[in-house]
Length: 112
Image (cartoon, rainbow, N blue to C red; front, side, top):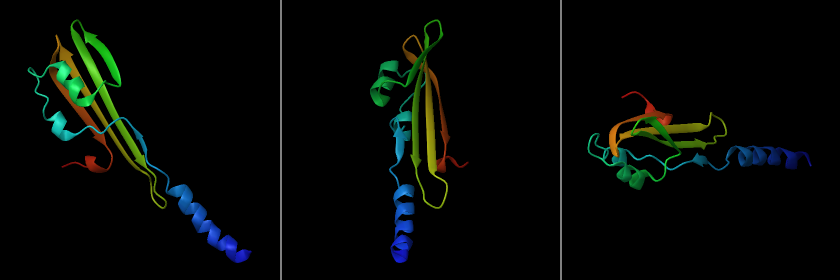
C-alpha cells in the first residue's frame, strides 16, 4: 500500500499540472496586421481578416474602434504558466482605417 501511494503522488501531480491550454479568441497574426494601411484599408477588410471584433465602440462622430483580443495560458507543472496576451485596436473614420495599436504581453513580447 505504501508503494502504491508513492507511485500515485507523481501521477496525480502530473495529471493536474499538465492540463489543457486555456485560449480565448483567435491568434492575431503579424502578417494580417501588416496588411492594414492607415488611410486606405476599408474597415470591411479588417472584419474580413480578423472576424467580428470582441468589442465595437463609437469614439467620435463617424469614428469607430474595433477591439480584438487573444489570450492563451498554458499550464506548467514546476514553473509559472505561460501566458500570452495580444490586443489589437483599430480606429476607423467614415469606413476607412485611420490608425491601429497592437499590444503584446507574454513570452514573445520581449523588447527587441
